[in-house]
Image 1 (tube, rainbow, N blue to C red):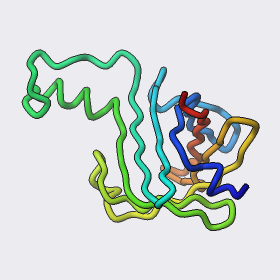
Image 2 (cartoon, rainbow, N blue to C red):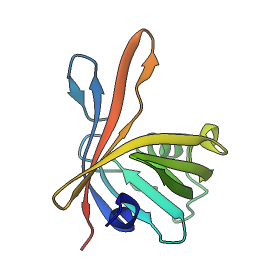
Image 3 (cartoon, rainbow, N blue to C red):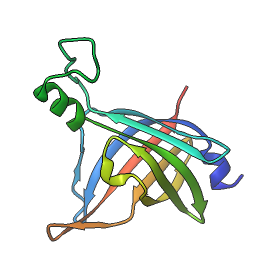
Image 4 (cartoon, rainbow, N blue to C red):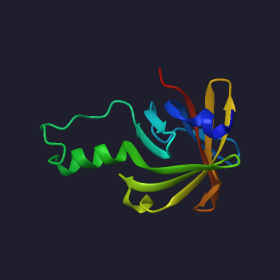
Length: 142
């Protein structure tokens, strides 16, 4: 079975860490939960959320206060689009994203499988003189 065939389906986030060049692991959103789906026809959907998110006082998802909206935005990540495999490279072509800077971008990750887990890792990122990757450990959603 190809890696593409192995990836098709829905996955739960088991772990998510920023891994610095020295091996230090830091969770971007402590206690995060998430689902990522890869369809056979090439679409993907990812939603990741931090733990203990505060609800809005009202019922309108677009009507929160500045503080409620800031908290909601800073504890969630969601995007979707097309996906493809090129060898061990997983490429997401972002069509919609809660983070507008990603719309239209192609994001390349490496993938490997360990038993029933998929490990998806960004290519190295350098920011502020530090190099790191983000690593997601996924398990099949049941």
